[in-house]
Structures are given as structure tokens and as C-alpha cells.
Amino acid sequence: ILNVEQSPQSLHVQEGDSTNFTCSFPSSNFYALHWYRWETAKSPEALFVMTLNGDEKKKGRISATLNTKEGYSYLYIKGSQPEDSATYLCAFIDSGGSNYKLTFGKGTLLTVNP
Amino acid sequence: EPEVTQTPSHQVTQMGQEVILRCVPISNHLYFYWYRQILGQKVEFLVSFYNNEISEKSEIFDDQFSVERPDGSNFTLKIRSTKLEDSAMYFCASSEAYRGGGYTFGSGTRLTVV
Image 1 (cartoon, rainbow over the protein chains, first blue to last red):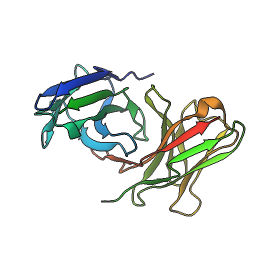
Image 2: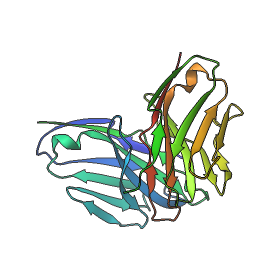
Image 3: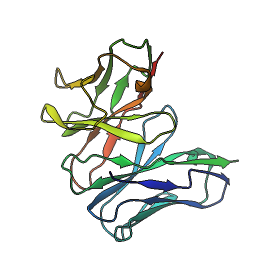
Image 4: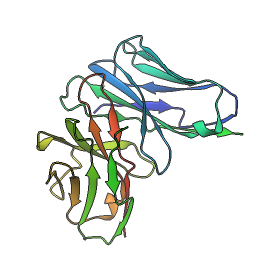
């Protein structure tokens, strides 16, 4: 059974704060790591697909890093805004499968207070 | 941008009844999936569908569940005799099916079994 863990479970920050969360995953059989942003009643929105050790990706104020050797990825949000409030999900794809199946963490619920 | 659409957004059904959840995935994607999230738990994989047949299913996906792609556009999940524990948010998704490729998720169907 693949274990994907995210921390913290929830986070409250003030508008303008920068924040980061962690996703840990099995360091063996790595294939890809996905990050999603999910607001209630909406589709999970793809943020990043990361495939190479040392990858760093950026989308506006959000960025992510990847360390496949130690099995973790960080998601950073710079200058948080209230509209960043959402659940951030990471999901792992292992190389042993052939169907690009995602194994999810439980998510980090971010609340940004104005 | 192409979307995955799901209907209905919310369904309430009595225990023992059959339900059909409907999805229109992105047609030029190769893999289609159903995932679900029971409240407070991780998003979990149910089934993947490739080349008009099931390519992988989880332990959850027992004989009560079935999937079909009857007309080349719709992708349906049927639960034959619903149980209380089937109450969850059900997500349909499709994948570009290559290492760096992303998923597109629908906005989900909230199924409540009473």
C-alpha cells in the first residue's frame, strides 16, 4: 500500500504571509508527483506535474520543489491572498503501475484571513 | 480549455437503490477514471478505463460497481444497490497518459445514501 502524507492538515495565515506545506511519498518506484488546488464545489485544479528529482516549478505566486531521493515535495505560496484559500492535494504515481493511477494525500486546508 | 463535466452535482438516494453517475471526459484523452472521497478521508482510486475496457480496479470496486462508455462520449459509474457507506463525493477524471501529462477532473457528484 502506497502511503502519501501531507502536513500540516490545516493552516490559517494572514493575507500577505508566505506559507509552505509538505507532501511525503515513497522514495522508491517514483514516476510522477501532482499538486492540485481544490475549492469546495469546484473541480480539483491541476497546479504542477513534477517528474524529475530537483524539479522546481512556478505558477505566479505558487511554486513547488521535488526531492525524489528522500521522497518529499514542498509547495510554497508567496504573499498569500484570501482567494488562495482552498485544499491543496498532492498525488503520487508509482512506476510499478501502467494506468497513471493517482494515490492522494489527505490534503492541506489553507485559510487566508484578510 | 477542455473540461470534464459531471452530472448530477448532488444525488440523494435510498439504501438499496441503483444510481448512475454520469461524466463526459475529454475525448482525446486516453484514460478515464473514477475516484471518490468519503468525508474526512483521502481521495481514493476506484477504477481506470482504457481502450473501452477496465484496465485496473481497486478493492473497493466490487460487483456492485460497473462502468460503461456506451456512446464514445459519456462515461458512467453505476452502483447497483447502494449502501450507506457509498456516501461520498465521486470524481470523474481523464488523463493525457504520459509521464508529464496532467489529469483533468470534473467537479464531482455528491452522493448521499439515506
